Image (cartoon, rainbow, N blue to C red; front, side, top):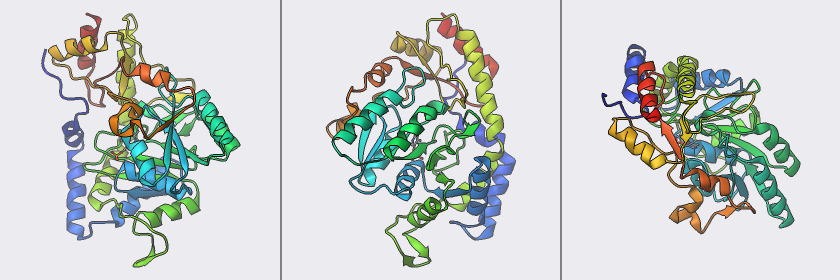
Length: 372
Ligand SMILES: *Cc1c(COP(=O)(O)O)cnc(C)c1O
């Protein structure tokens, strides 16, 4: 069997839209304007419209988006922010960078997203200690929305803001609501491998609230209310014109590419039903956009080895939960009942190849290999 390309095939994404991307490149280069200009404004409007939201403030990457979204909704140094340990380290790094304390709760073992019971116990325990939980960051991991029906009432009850981490869920839906439209603000990453990816770094804060948008737009550029006049302390986190122009091209294909991902995911599921691997099963009302196709296997390492021998690249997202990593171990506070589901997952999860231009025959071959 021929060796498959590594999981997200970035060159294919380029070649697939080469003419439009090359035209975008020339348009920007010929314009003589390279940072925060027409392309950025147009992309912000187009992506806000795609998400059905009023405001999109582009930033330099997804980590900045999480940090600035939290600051824009009012989280400050010393506040506590609840998220999960089963996420990209960026989520926790962003919380800590603004000087907040991260509290980690468990995930649901089927859905892989924030477990509402663990969240409720954590909020209860924190309230008893009079601690100040300012915000909750549910992560829509792998392309499926967290259980917002259960999380939002808890946030409301305890007076917490919600910042959705949508870095893996561009275009995902929950009961007809698009990822990023359910909280006070949302953070997106446009890292090249994401469902909507640039050809470099990029990110955005989306929000339905004008005041949050205003804060975020000040924060991303030195706290400038207008040029050279800082009214708050901000950072430099700007999107450049080239990436914005590329993202406008990529955005036109997002819905199509998400449904290609869904088709391949469906093919995997039908071919693997009779095996002993545990397949993803989206929760009711969820439209999963399969940023990653993650299965669980009791013999995960052996399975990965066999696939590797057959030339098939797999990966683990992520190889160790954040709270077990050396730098974070001592610092992070965990939910009162610990994180048993999170810890159990790490021995069993594996991501199979999935990208929009993976062919049906590739999925067939991968499944044959797993069946063996
Ligand atoms: C990719 C990712 C981020 C961070 O995005 P960068 O653009 O790499 O900074 C944050 N959260 C999650 C869940 C991610 O997958």
